[in-house]
Image 1 (cartoon, rainbow, N blue to C red):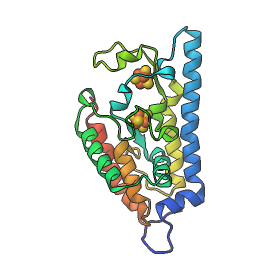
Image 2: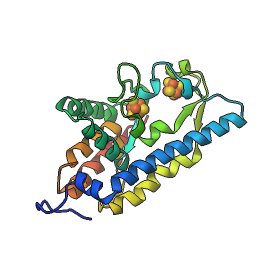
Image 3: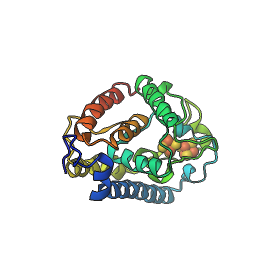
Length: 225
Ligand code: SF4
Ligand code: SF4
C-alpha cells in the first residue's frame, strides 16, 4: 500500500508494516538467512575438521567494533524491538547519530568503535534481530586474533548468505510500496536504524525514506577501506 501523502487516513510506516504482515515476513526472512548460514558453516567446519570459534567466544567482541551494514528490511525488525522494549529514547537517537556519522566518515581499517547495541558485558542487545551481516560472518581462527588489526583471520562464510539480503529486499520494497532507488535501501547500521525510527510514525514515509536512504547508501559506499 502506498502512502505518498500525509493525509490522516493514510497509515504510518509502522502501521503499514504491522498490519500487512511485512514486518513479520522481513524479520523471519533475516532469521532464516542467519540460521541457514550457521548450519552451512557448521557443516563446512565439520567436514574440514575446523572449529567455529564464534560458537564459544568469550573474548572482547572485536567483530562488533567494525563497520556494519544493514538493510532497511533488517532495520525495521530492530526498530520494532526497540519500541517494544521502550528503548527509543533521545539518548539512543543521539548515540545512533554519532555512530552513524563516524561509520560514514572513517575508513574500515581505522574504524574502532563498539556498536551502539553492544552492552558492557559484550553481549548484543538486539541479538535475535541483528542484521544478516552480523549473523553470517564466522571465523575458525582463535578469537584473540580478531582483536589484532593484523590478526591472522580465517573467515568462514556461507556463499548462499551473500546474495540473500538483496533478494529479500527485492520483495520488501514493492510490498511496502517504496520507491525503487538506484541503490539498495541499505547503509551504516546506526544510520538505517535512526532513519527507520524517524520514519515509523510518519504517513509520508515513502518520500521520507527515499530522500533519507539514498544519500545514506552513497555515504556508506564511499568510504569502504
Ligand atoms: S568474530 Fe572473533 S570476536 Fe567475533 S564472535 Fe567470532 S571469534 Fe569472537
Ligand atoms: S548488531 Fe549486535 S552482533 Fe551486530 S555489531 Fe552490533 S552488537 Fe555486534
